[in-house]
Image (cartoon, rainbow, N blue to C red; front, side, top):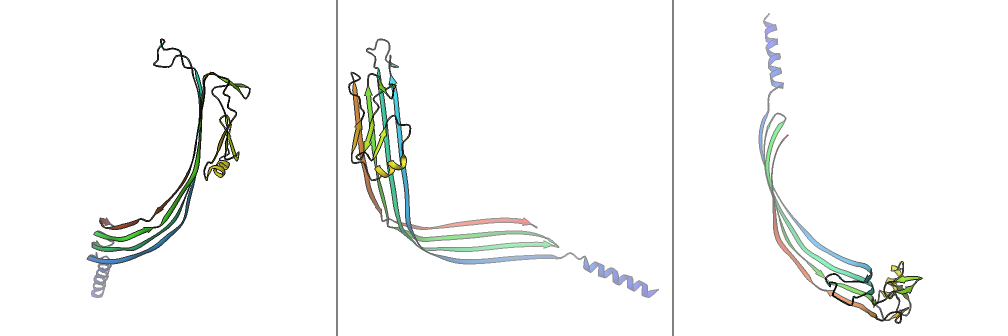
Length: 251
């Protein structure tokens, strides 16, 4: 009978030991330091092509707004305007970035756990010190050309088998290498780039009708662009930035 009682007590103590709750408390501090050395060079070409075509056609007749019925004679005119612009830009990049970025970090974390549950709180701080510069030796070249035609007449005229407002014309650019009309349904932009990309040297106006109306006006404007810009700038980047993160979690 006594042996049975002792055995029972021993089993109960063993069971109590397996289910015991474990408590712990820890504090962790860390510090880190890193230096990043910059020494990078960028070389290459950046190109862009821009072609713009605008066209306006309008008829002004009768009493104009704000003029009143007593304003006479009325202005009855037909106007046509068209502009074709080509712009090419090329930048040859040659720039060097050199210097350092220093990062200093610190963290403190406190954790209290009971069994499998842990409550953690902490603070992380990171400070970055920048000290680097970018030295440029970039060359940008811009070329292109522009042609603008404006016409104004006080009568309609017969064009392409029907009455058209204004005085439509054909523009022969750079000796006929490109012909663009104010009545064309489409314009070959790639051909315009090839012909006008290095400038406009000559423009002939074809098909103008200066006898169909009492008033006829034509204005032609054309020009070229040939620019080169060299960038030899030095950009210095210095400063300090600090980031602080406060966190709390239970897992």
